[in-house]
Amino acid sequence: MSRLPELLETPRLLLRVPEPGDAEPLNAAITASFAELTQWMPWAAEQPSVAQTGAFCAEARENWESDLRYGLIMVEKDGGAIVGGSGYPNIDWSVPKFEIGYWCRTSIVGRGYASEATRALARLAFDEMDAVRVELRMDDGNRGSWRVAERMGFELEGVLRGDSRSNSGSLCSTRIYSLVDPTRLRDVG
Image 1 (tube, rainbow, N blue to C red):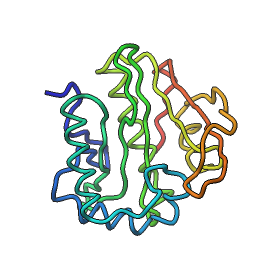
Image 2: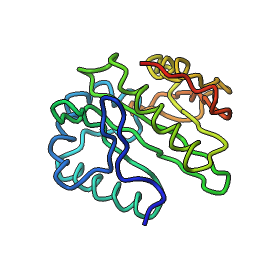
Image 3: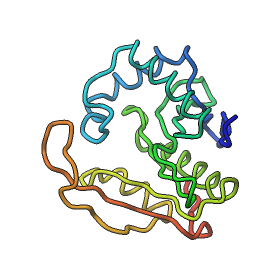
Image 4: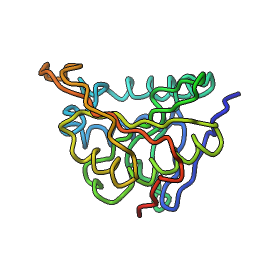
């Protein structure tokens, strides 16, 4: 059984491990936002089919059960719409440290859902998983993600210049933000 909860609740969201029935609505959210996602998310190199999204849902559940990764969907409490994804794409239990990732459906960007999910995941890491470090990593050109990190109180540690390739093949850099003092986590919302 996983050390991580299957469900986290925030004021407006349910953050939960995907289920098989989530494949179609999750795929619809990805499809509606694919033009933006493919710019920033390595996993969005190609638009996934519903079957591929279903495979992701199954893999996310397996990863959760084995404590490897924590892939969550963000579901609005009001109405039940899938508005994005979040979780810990990288966990190092030996430290312990947790990287938080997030994406939002293009039609709801700017409503604070990424910040709400990030705050809940940072609180979980520090309060219940004994984290000593929480990280946010993003493409250096993704200013929207910078704003989430900076509003939340994460500190820029540096930029890894030319460390990877984007989905289009261009060279890109990665910004790394961290939080090591949980009292510096800001409540934005």
